[in-house]
Length: 265
Image 1 (tube, rainbow, N blue to C red):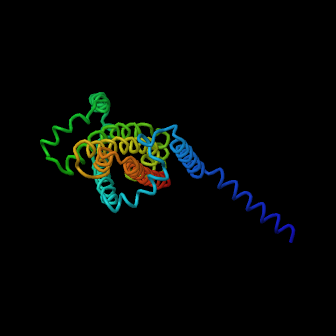
Image 2 (cartoon, rainbow, N blue to C red):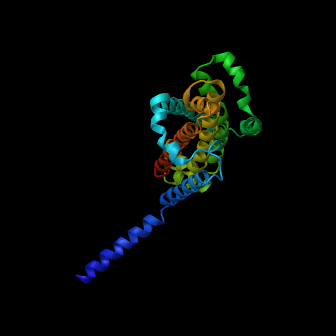
Image 3 (cartoon, one colour):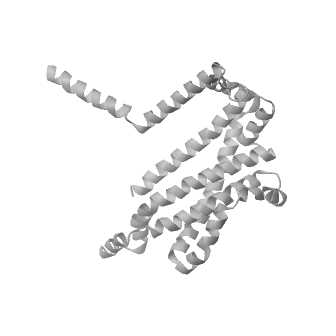
């Protein structure tokens, strides 16, 4: 009986230590600590509530934000626009990046151009696309697509180029077909670099979409942030900013799950 309780206690202790040491719990604990520190700073007057809202007030005001300004509708628009832009980036970047990997001459010719475009402030072109496409969601998608697709192309190319020749030789020695080598060897081996580019593309895409929404009043969370900020509704402004953060968290989580699936092939 004693041995059972000891073993049970040991198993429970190991599980407890595993939970405490988990990265997710550490991240949540750090987030809660930062929110509590910010709550104290604002409540004590060290930070002005006219500049930063108390986290408790901003969280409590989310229901009012939904009731009066359709927070969920704005969240859905920004999320949908970002997803569409990212899917277009994948459709263009993966075949084009693979093409540059396969055609060394084209890679030498155009990689420098792509790197220069990646560093260029493409965001400043938004008045041009407003004229071409009008003040609508298409402009948001295009402005999210352009800055995200370039780093993704470069990382797709680098990912396939980083696959070790030894892996390919082993696949050929087993008599695998070219398609099997591509899907079972090259794609999982290139996945870490490609998904790094995927995360960069998401970051650039989301930033540009929210910024255009903010500047041009095209709806979505960016418009909601601008509207509440210009009405000096600081708690609602931070509530909308928190919704933007949630979009990023959800999409990053989706990318992480996708990467695990690809690498486990």
